[in-house]
Length: 157
Length: 214
Image (cartoon, rainbow over all chains, first blue to last red; front, side, top):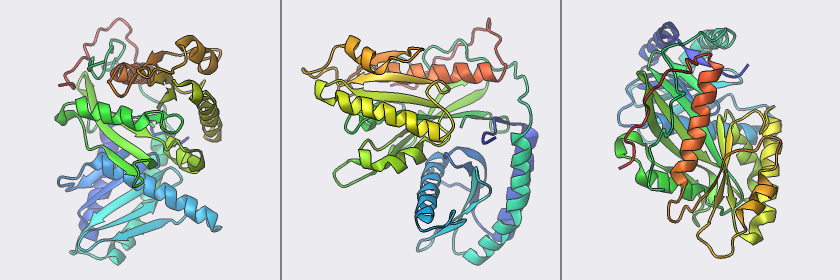
């Protein structure tokens, strides 16, 4: 099952603990776990003035395009991608067939260190996400959208 | 795919605008972006060619209603309409929650509309889903032009499945029914989400209107 339908507060804490430890060890600035459709599952670190949703959408698109490129040359996918800037860099790695981890870092660390610790945390994150996917959704009585008539207001239609 | 996060108190949905080339998918997002208040929108990102034709996708993140303390976030995408970009359309469709099929109402575009909706069905099938399994609405765009087909004809050609869906006559040039379309698909998603989560206290009356629009 691809979807993670919900994350409890405890799930978020569990994921955050892993990501915080990863950021601390790798000296990276920001990291997030996203699904391959571009939805943010977890994030940690200083996003600054970056719009995280946009970074996630573009990273998912970039990863998907590269996967297709890999397929065209006979590979299943390139499991990791690295984009090098002048001072800011981005490292993306596959967690499993549904999710990706994105890490942003600067000159305080190196791609080697980021890659090393990414390889380290992929298995525990993958195991956690698999657990989240395979459980039943709880009843959530405090939520109801049945009265939603115009989520974005009337606009100027 | 929609996800509810109890830690950050957010629900996220992905909506894709699909349709033939030059039918107005990007124009929908541009109009929405121009009307939504700054605090409820991110940048409109367009991966386009030098001639402003969508190459990969357009993306617009929006914050919408708050439901009992949960923020809802909608991520709007468009696909490239040109026939040659089918692989890209498949990538953008991944994890989609809801679809707006934008048709070009002009007579000479009927064949392209039909071809595009068939292509949508094929691409959904590759993701093991179908139009029967995913919320979608139809938008008959460019109603401001003189050479448009009557709505009955568009309904006959495009809205002919066992279960007919909501459709809207729109003009992205004037903004006519752009928000009506967006509200309709968002409402379907919220309804499906609450239903699937077994949340439905159907008598609860949650006020969800908010002032996203200037």
